[in-house]
Length: 72
Image 1: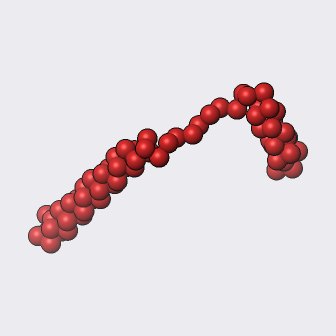
Image 2 (image 1 turned 60 degrees about the horizontal axis):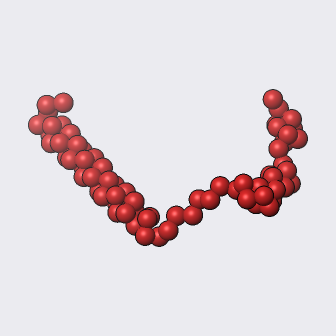
Image 3 (image 1 turned 90 degrees about the vertical axis):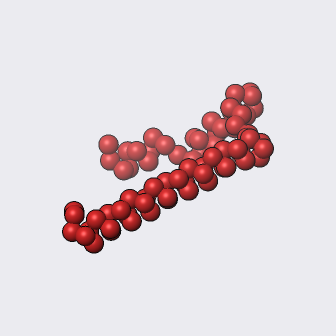
């Protein structure tokens, strides 16, 4: 399907009308997450990022040491 054909099938006006209709009849899904619920997830993601960074750092250090001694 070409770009022009895709553009004619989808538009912001159609999307806006659909969202407005859903809001009017209470069919729009609720997705609010409280900051308290997010804090636990943020903490987990920070910890995961630290673990991944340490793992990469360790692998790079090990690879560097092996290359230094010629044991590739």
